[in-house]
Image (cartoon, rainbow, N blue to C red):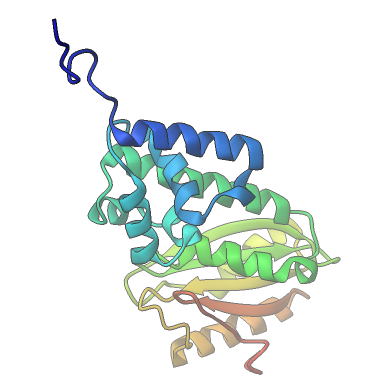
Length: 233
């Protein structure tokens, strides 16, 4: 009796072997052994169990510009880019974990020694917000970060800021200095005239009780503007 080569168990989809090999490479060589899209594939494996996710991972990196941007994109935007809701939550959770870990690493450390990390953290937390958000970074007398708080959320182009509230909160925390941070949903970090006026009002109010405004950083998309660096503070 002749046998048919197609008799027997159906061959497993090609991506099954790919997933096994990718996991093995990660286990033997760590993250350094994988490219960015392959790391993203690992994250997607559990949320997308029956599909070749390599094209999807590459597409996400192309759309958002990099791993950092993918992981910190709002879930709704990830869904628009082709992910299921479950996959969007899985990817977004990775970004949320990273943000919390970064924030923990920044607390109780001098901001000048971790300035770029601080900027990266603020960018990840705020750059993709669709409305303006006003954030306060409170420092002790050794310029160590003691608190990071969102004080106000506003509209697409305005977040109300009240100098008295900024000073009041700084006094409650025993802060000696503060850094103002807000985002521009348009992506352009150039400050408006209202931003400049508000900054000077907050700095003047803080000075009356001995609190220093070290800087005001405006977060755009992939860029930032420092009032101190640009000579506006």
